[in-house]
Amino acid sequence: MSRAATEILRRRGRLLLWVGCLAVACVLPLLFKSGFLVSLLCQMGIMVVFALSYNMLLGQTGLLSFGHAVYYGLGAFVAMHALNLVGKGGGPLATALLPLAGGVAGLLGGVVLGYVTTKKAGTTFAMISLGIGELVAACALMFPGFFGGEGGVSGNRVVGKEKLLGLTWGPQIEMYGLIVAWAFVAVVAMYALTQTPLGRMANAVRDNPERAEFVGYDTQRVRYLMLILSGFFAGVAGGLTALNYEIVTAETLNAHTSGVVLLMTFVGGIGFFYGPIIGAILITVMQIVIGGLTHAWLLYFGLFFLFMVLAAPGGIASVIAMQRALWQAGLLGRMLPHYLATVIPVLVLLAGLVGLVELAYALLAGEGATAGDEATRVLGMQVHLRSAMPWAAALAVSAAGAAGLYWIGGRMKRAWHETLSTLNGGRA
Image (cartoon, rainbow, N blue to C red; front, top):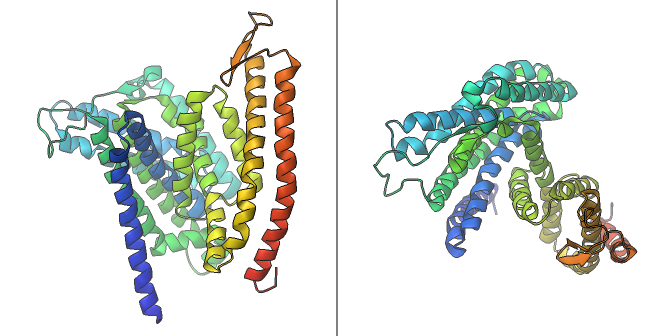
């Protein structure tokens, strides 16, 4: 098969993938008619745009930012103020275009703040972005006229008496459709940007800025342009957030929001375009689902992040890419039995660790302290926190899972090296 034919097939495959993803996004809320699911999907769509905008800095340009929430928050606040203005005489069409106002706000924020932050790269850029992030977060409480103080700024996305194709954006399912539309356009635009000369030069600046400067490119200008564009898409995500929740508070600007998007991007995989998409979906589910089950969900987040750093520093996307290479070489079948064998010890280890975490949290939080030695409800069971039995049981389950994982993991490691050796023609 010629190179031209191969390229045509590759482009058709990409087109089918884009269309398939859009179709799945449209069908999901129809298959599971649940208000909770629709709200969860709305949040996922917003976070996908936000995480991809952050990866334009970290993954494509090599800029580690601790203040990306600034552009997200500015977009949200400007979109909310625009919504309140639209409410005085606008309609559904104007409301549907409000994420664009958020994008412009994020872009202008990038123009002003990016000129300073992109003067340097590396650790210096990271520290400057952290300082600017804290500065803007402090301003949110100092200027209540714009930021609304501690209560934030609220609005109503249902404006006017007219309808746009029968839509008012009031029901959550209609809002989901709007989020899907904006998210799809934003994701396609960000992917297209990676194929442009600017996207390629951003990769060159990330990999070897000295060589990029040697061949005549202004690395500071490349970083500056990428930050401006990243700020635009972060602002679009902020505008969608304002419409979705109909309230914006100072939390959208703080370091926690910047940390969450960093976590999403890193967990998904900064070296792949689809990595932040995976990370945004996974972390959003963990935030909402685990956060509704336990008060110690932040601790689980920390443990999960630590595990990803140690086990898969390239993110989930890197693991998928490795398995794809094995599948293309016809070697994935060798590893599947080993992967399946690890499921049971991993689940046992997780059960034990969850028990220890919940017991420790209940004890340190003082649950049952007023009742002396009376039983406290942990994981749906009545236990005595100061009794040795529940602690011993959790430790025993954890030890059993760890021992099983150690034994099976050793065999899987040997099989992995043998498979890589075969894949590389005996050079591994």
